[in-house]
Length: 113
Image (cartoon, rainbow, N blue to C red; front, side):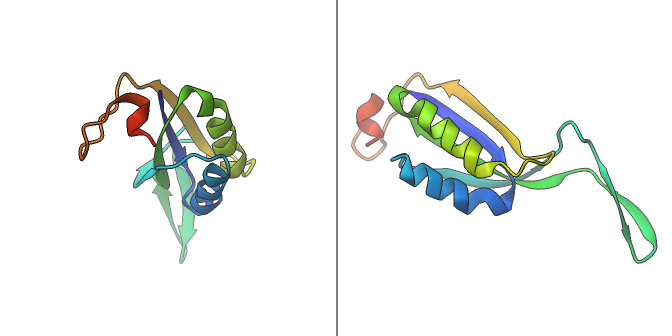
């Protein structure tokens, strides 16, 4: 089992969610977050004043998948989240040692379905 953590642009959330559904990936956790990457801060002008904006709004997705779903899920996120511009985000894949469904105490891959 793997935990996929993806940091993406907020307006790409719905296309990513749809792509994951098409890939038969169920279960998704979404959190609003802010961050910066390689591009650091951006300077904007507003009513003649310049200001620096260092943390861009992003969405953090967490998806738990079986081994056989991993490649398809990562590809679905990558393709649906991409805009081709700097700041599209990152996908991190972590090994999940175990999963426990709280209600039934099921463990492992049984708890995912």
